[in-house]
Image 1 (cartoon, rainbow, N blue to C red):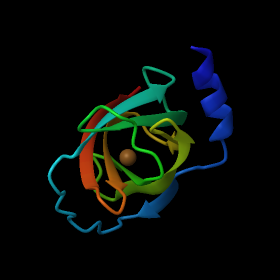
Image 2: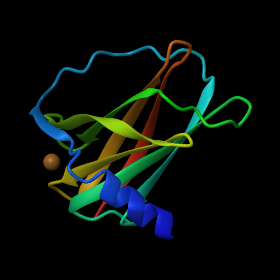
Image 3: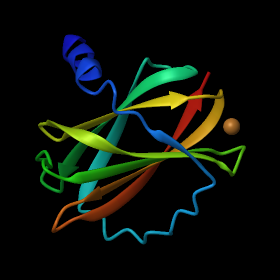
Image 4: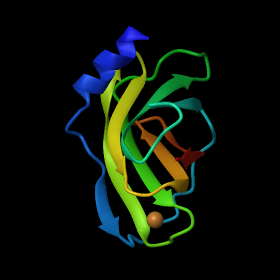
Length: 129
Ligand SMILES: [Cu+2]
């Protein structure tokens, strides 16, 4: 899929920052006015650089553009291993971020989508090999 390669290049350099044990507040998500789908490159994801990209659509299935999309990744076996960063708007409701997974295992990806009208958060499980 060639467009994805372009995405990968666009978003290179935007790397999730490794933070020690960040006490992330529990954001109570508003009602689900949007739907978020997560894709990864490479798929399946492996230790090292992985592009995460999210397709965000509203209740009518229209792309949500111009949102602030914050991404958190936590290694579920290790409570102190978390990363956080902002995905960049690629247009057409697609937001991308490159992250560096330092360890294989189960990771929980939490995506928070915010606009003036939307405050939606969604979790995804990701098995990194
Ligand atoms: Cu770990």
